[in-house]
Length: 108
Image (cartoon, rainbow, N blue to C red):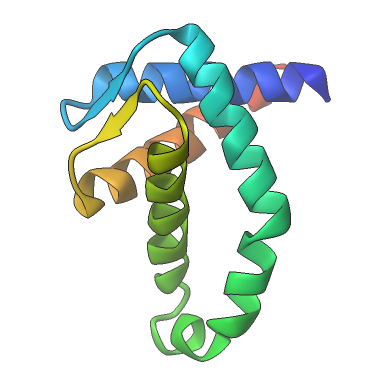
């Protein structure tokens, strides 16, 4: 479980370094972002998904990207050292985190 958390923080760090619209201060900040993402994915995301089921069905699942981006922006407000320029960058950031995290976990 700790390895998956560290892989997530590495995915956050790499994603932030690859994107111009996302700034991250350090790897320690990436750990904070990963902790925040883990908490909101456990506590808030299931509630938001259940409340958004009609929108998710109507958009064939694409509304989940909006939920993920909103949660990323929430983390941006809570974690000092993370700056996301716009909602579009938050969507791209969440997609890139997911791709890198999946790829790194597949290697382990």
